[in-house]
Amino acid sequence: MSNRAIYERAFDEDVQTETNNCPECNGRVTTNAVETTCEDCGLVIDEQRIDHGPEWRSFEADERERTGAPLTATRHDRGLSTEIGRGTDANGNQLSGRKRRQLGRLRREQSRGRFQSKAERNLAHGLSEVRRISSALDLGETIRDQACRLFRSAQNEDLLRGRSIEAMAAASVHGTCRCNGLSRTLEEITEPARVEQARVRTAYQTLNTELGLPAQPVRPSGFIPQLASELDIPDRIRNRARKLAEQAESAGAVSGVDPTGFAAACLYKAGCDAGRLMVQSDVARAANVSTVTIRTHRDTLNELAM
Image (tube, rainbow, N blue to C red; front, side):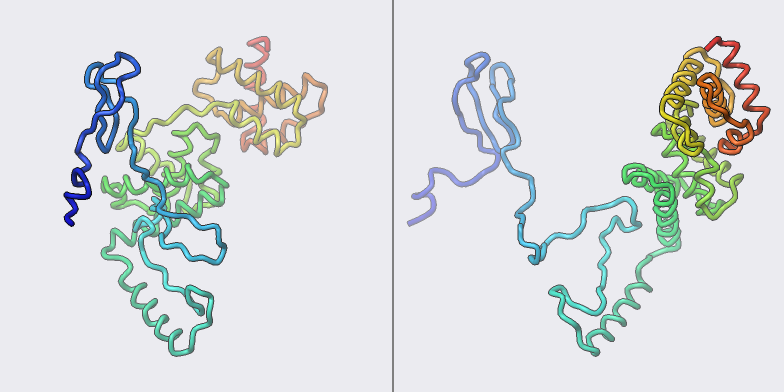
């Protein structure tokens, strides 16, 4: 007996079938492999009938998966390269000496042919620097991935020519923090980087100019928690300092000033108003500014009558 005798029609994803009437206009409803729509009013009643989820899942701890890791922007090859193990096989059994020597030779050849060009080698080195700096600064995975994509974009635009890879990697992390409004100064990002701060600043200016980064202005209120934690200031003084900084930002008194210095001045004024003895030199040292900067911004806050 043929299949045509068993089934009324062959399988075809584009075949449309009629179902119930439309719940809105009581019109004619048709269904294909993608969606269920009304031909009269255009209402989409249902869509994506095909399940695009994982093929299967297992609740056994010792059962091997048939799929690899997802694609990642933090690797030069998107994470698609094969990793050759050491010592044991996929089941955890010990390998013989002959097999281990064979895997060692395969691992050596794979390491030699891992990069197809000098540009790919530079990309791998730069992405490893981005991951290292992000880990040292305790940044989230989203910030790390965005910084890796920014570094990859810089290489695609040929911005690495004549510049330090380490400086461009640190500048990518700094630019990503600026675009996401994170309160990270250039000094903090340069500290774990293996390059001078001036070179990182130049690389960031190149990224900002050539790629047009949507960098957000750094606000003093974002540095209040970090400085307060370093100076061991209570929460009530910290909250008062944040209100002082936000009010100064609303009044436009923070334009063109160092945000860390202004944040330190807000903490100093809030502490003095609360009767807490604070030494200007300690506050200035935590913010990496001078005591003159603290006094100048404190006078600005006094003039605003906050």
